[in-house]
Image 1 (cartoon, each protein chain N blue to C red):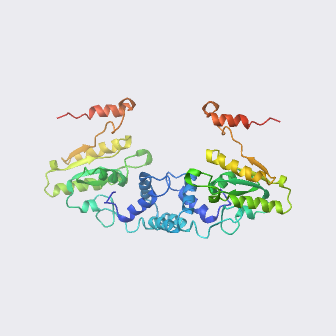
Image 2 (cartoon, helix red, strand yellow):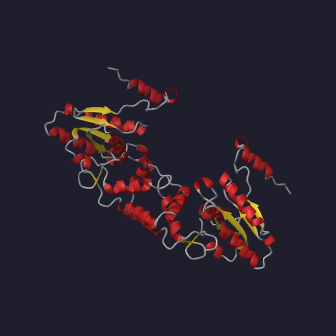
Image 3 (cartoon, rainbow over the protein chains, first blue to last red):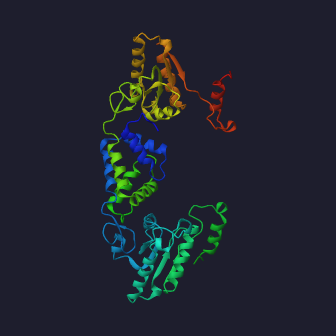
Length: 208
Length: 208
């Protein structure tokens, strides 16, 4: 592109451009930022990136990211193992943890059902979820005391996945719930689309 | 923030968040991208960042970025040394080089006059520009043959800087020009602000 640039600078611009959400212009800006940053900061960033994946694996229980075989959440004895929140991605775990509302554990599917992209149940951690619930029931826990909260996205694929999981789990006799859908906090009723409003009406709660 | 995340992952999210234009959410996305990228790519990015500044300096002639004392553009004997394009930043050199219109050389000011931010002529490569032009004239070049194209941004600071430079250079007898200002390509006349339209009218060119 800009042949006059020193090779090392062009290289880092190219590498930045490959990252998701970073276009050629942002990549250039980032490279210029490095150029004007102290050497120590640049090395800190490089080291953090190089080390980011070192020693990381997926939790054998919930498939969240972990430093050992079991993640910090599954390891925590204060967590309610009978309440499993099913999410699409690790980022969803981060978002939910931030609410501090959930005292249960998670199950990361690592995707959603999407026939167009060739993603079926086998490409997801679906059978692992079923076995996990079956294991729970085997330990003489009343299935009615187990709650599976399905927190996939309220998108077409997310809803399809939620319904698919519900079908598989219902036969085991466990309680299956879906996260509430409706108007987001700060939302505006007359700007909401029909689907959101329909779900807001269906999901209405009685004041007590 | 999310105490359950492995330290190495939290570290890289923090480092990404420090970069300009990257918020906490984008930083998380980038970290997840690394997590799902092959080890080789992650190391490639880390190395490119660590090496980005290695052996780089500013050109002694024009203050563009360079691998040796003189940058690739100033080194090029095919470039017209009597036409100097004055820009604010290195990114502006990249943008102008992409047009392939300029056969002259550059002078990077590394900023603009901005009294509010405490940036006066001494904080910029201003005196270096004057000496450079004086040197040119000393080599028995007719001052009228020297053109200084002022390509600072058409912002308040950019215009002020352009006027300041013009004043200093005019006394040396050289030709001083300002890049054209007006409607951008693909722009819409009735959406343009008054200042842009005023300059578009002032900068009109006759069809020949």
